[in-house]
Image (cartoon, rainbow, N blue to C red; front, side, top):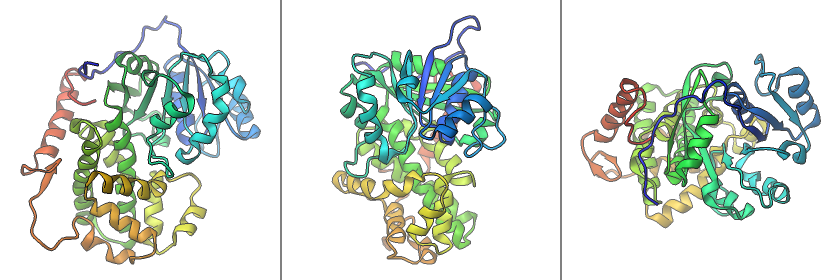
Length: 385
């Protein structure tokens, strides 16, 4: 299939009827994305595992556990019955923990037989047992045409977006038409959506930035400062790009919203679950203690091992992620991590910044130039997102 230039989409006309959508998973991001869709004109039904949570969303228009203080649109409702959530849906969005996706899909499969609607992944993880991306698990479990599958990613901290702070995201699908259909639905006054056809790069960007955010949290918990964190973010982008390109991604995708944009947001915000998990590790808590303290899933913790396995198979060196794993495994004191994070080789090296190329900062320079061009041109002509 010919790869078309990614574009930003304009909002649908005010009198066009919105789609009926089901969002499976009522955590912070699932509920926030449901709000995005509802504020864009969709009729949204959330599926919540707990009946009392579904009742609060449906009747109180709140999800106080995950989005305290946020009022939800009147066009959002909720149920704890999967069949009721799916009934009549034009689009289905999945927002469950990545490690339980396959189990949830088994329950959805009989409800989606012979269906043709798009299936959208809102998750940022890889399956620990198989190393598969979420779109691959969806295709495998639902036995559906991969062109029906889309993924959404970007600098998307749920609580900020739920409070309607302006942001942007990217929707990727092998089908440009599918990507554009979903992007039109996920578009409102505070949420702007771009599209591309690089599913691999978009998914891996969302996964890999979590691992770098854990590293940032570790050094933050230890008490190291901005120089250390800036070094990790910069070299982390190199690791992300090298890994993703080696596994079939387009390098420019990692310099866009799904890569650099998401990396910055996740690394710098105290709202980031992965940053929080890393900070607890840096403060001396063990892995199991961190898991117990986290109110929500930090996808980066489960993704470290399968990503490193894929890196070895792809012959990609990831020193930052390797050091994070050593801390997780209790084999390294968090205070000892900083000297090793950006390289574990004492030999002077070229500063590779774009998939193995020593170009004196060219990748970051081009990334920021692309961001400037997007704002200047209103999103037209963007090469990645």
